[in-house]
Image (cartoon, rainbow, N blue to C red; front, side, top):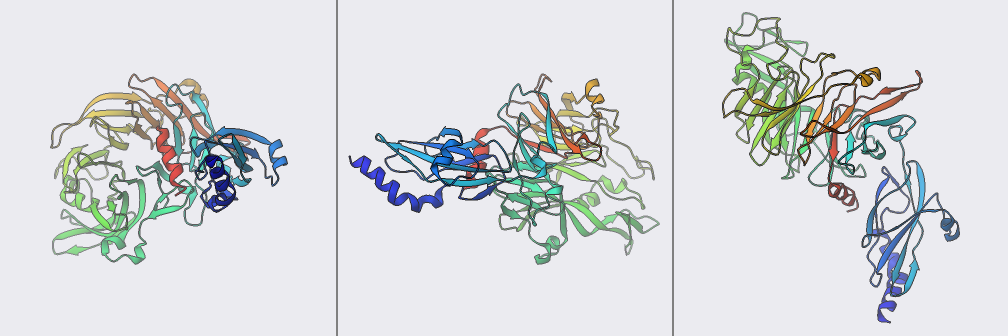
Length: 511
């Protein structure tokens, strides 16, 4: 009897005060269909069941006639997928305990919508249905949308005046159950609701010259396991010492700069940088490309009239072994950096000598292993792997290379696994090109690889160690003027393979 009384007391007298702990919150507008429903635990309740109806209803009879989902909760919460974006919903909880059954209040929410999740405007075509990783989720930076493996949109980054969602790159999950991404100017960390949790400091408020000159974050942004943030960026107003030349006029990004200091010539311009911030936005580590050029063989790579754009386009921090691999597309080079010392341990690519390889106006297109590479990373077994665009020719298929590194010191790694991202005749007829540049590759827990071919293709696939395609798909966008579907550009895509990681992302948004 006491248990029944306790249940009724809590239900009628305390439950109204606990409504602030109910999710989704009353009248909230959600940017997702995969929703974390939760209610406060009620003493005496042995089970909780959620009922959901499409539409807004304020009386129990109307609601009851339109219930479409009745789902028991795990304890007092559960992640549930509702059918559609751009729809109003009403829901309630049924509490049961000691032969007592009580019906909770009616609550309401709406799923928002944007063109990117409208199947009449954007869609994902499945080429190979998932043979594994059926419960994985894809994050596409082309439109800031998360899909299931059947191509159904489940979440989108809500447009705001702070984040320009038309130019998203490197959208991915962090170890802390949040998301990081890049825009044209800034990196951001957001929660599942799209709320901004962190961004880089405003350079106008910087207190050091280094911080004032850092801008234009690009290609890769990662939250580290220690809570810090690391990103590729651009450093302005850098003096980079060059070998003495007769002509002291240099061109940096099409801007002629003349600088002379006795017999030493400098280039004053914009160069890449790899920067690490702590949680408060303080710069705690900086690796400067300008200094690397100045102290390396690359001073013999550029002539007086050349742009010194190495195009640093990827990094990966092996936190356990304290090394970073950094990729430079324009010189087809990957280097291995010791952290935090910053010294270069290995160089993979052509090495230049004074009076040697370099000839003005003549530049090589690559090396014997890779060309115009993207997404250089370390595997779980310590191998270097990357997406090789070969010579960048649209008629040559790109490749995924896995390489064993040599001992410390310059030398060539050994290719131990290679996958050619070939395009079938049927796919050529659909408009695919063998190679359109860009590309991304991510090692999965079982040693398979998730590959995004990038460029105009937007074709993605999962390939196992035996080179069997376990899943593949491509994105399309409807061309209203041409009244036809066209392939939708995606720079990079990422994947969530563990359901627990997704659940952490969802539940974190309710804290």
